[in-house]
Structure formats: structure tokens, C-alpha cells
Length: 165
Image (tube, rainbow, N blue to C red; front, side, top):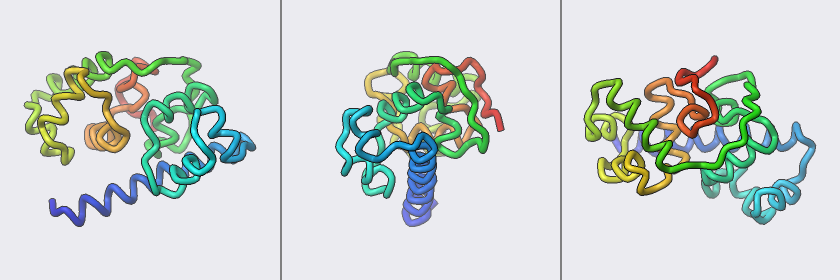
């Protein structure tokens, strides 16, 4: 896959997440400033998330979903219906890494093959799988979308691996 196609796909993913974030915020009748206060970000940062100027960190997205009972799968556009998990979690790099390893071994893939399929460097993926680094939103999206895995499962909000459509 060439770099232009990859970049266009990333832009489309970012736009979808940002539009869903804006929709959720407006559904809650919150301003960007109010959401920023809750998430520890400025109004400008929230605006930048919603316009795609910068990526929303996974930790902030999970906090948002925890506080307002949204499913990650709904906010990132995997499902059209919000599933309420009523589960307030803190991100755990080791848990996410274990879930990535469980997924990879169940699919009988090497780290390199999974990385190639999801347009990641193998060393970066290794850092996610070993819990050395917290996975970023775009690689998490790519892995979940490619293998039809729930982002809520990946971060530990549900035991259901598959996306509930």
C-alpha cells in the first residue's frame, strides 16, 4: 500500500472520530470549554481534536467514554449504536499489551505480519504488546478495524472481543 493511500485513510479515520466526538459533546449539551475543563484540556485543544488538527490521546478518549457512558466503538465509528458498559476503567498498558498478544497469537501471526497488515513498525507494535508504551489512537483503531476487534475490549471495558454492530 503506498504512502498516499495510507495518509488518506488516516485522515478519513481522524475525521470520523472527530465528527463523532463533536456529536457526543453536542448531545451532552457541552461547550468545548466545558469538555476541556472536564478532560484537563483547553478549549483550543478540544477544538483541535474536533477539527483533526491534533489527535485526541487514547487516555482522554477513554476518560470521556467513562464519564459520559459512551462506548469507544461508538465514538470511533465501529458501531452506529452506543453500548453502555457502565465500567469506569483506567488505562493499563500491560492489559492492553496482553490483549494485543492474545489477539495476535489467536490469529497465529508474528508481530511483523500483524504490523505489516496494520501499517505499523514492528518495533513500535512490540512496545505496545509488551506494555512498554501505551498504544496511540490511530494504531489501536487500525488493529481493531483490521481484525474486527472491539476497542472497548482492547482497553478492558468489555470481555466481548468482537465489535457489536
